[in-house]
Amino acid sequence: MYLSRVELDVYNRRKMRDLKDLNSYHGFVESCFPEEIEKGIRTRKLWRIDKLNKKTYLLIQSQIKPNKEILEKYGVIGTSLCKDYDKFIDSLEEGMKARFRVKLNTVISKSTGNKDERGRIVPVPTRDLADFFLARTDKNGFKVSPNDFDIFEKELLPYKKVNKKPYSLVSASYEGVLTINDLERFRQSLKNGIGRKKAYGFGMLTIIPYEK
Image (cartoon, rainbow, N blue to C red; front, side):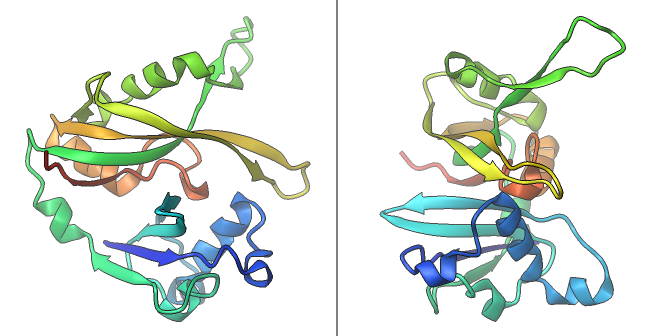
């Protein structure tokens, strides 16, 4: 498994005009793996847009290395990086603390009152965003104290299904300090992501070792 990053050339309008919604980013991420396209296969990939020190980055987690030239198509030339992620995941230990970041599609299914109908998908109210996250920690192999994380960004992101009207997906980005309390579950969460719409930039959990 590999973790890749490239700085997006966000001030180059000519370059960035193609990346107008989450579907465009999804298509671009898939295009970074021409070997899979040639073979007609598609492995799981997680990705996320991160902003750090006034720069914007695309992070991709994948089974194989992306094509560097394609990865930099919308990026600043020479800024792409790719690291072996398996070694890091294998080094984790139960009880370990780490700084984390994750962007989630913050929606819930609300009952319509009719048991024969599927629940209606609705956004999580702002006041409930913290509890929404905390309710998903234990089953994903980690715990977080209510005082040890922040919601640093809330967004409405453009999304369009084929032959349907475009709409927006709600998101909230969380960061803080976690403790691994179920190592195998946590490793699966890192590898497979958390929550909904993982193919569209949500659910990618990243961590770095915690240092006070």
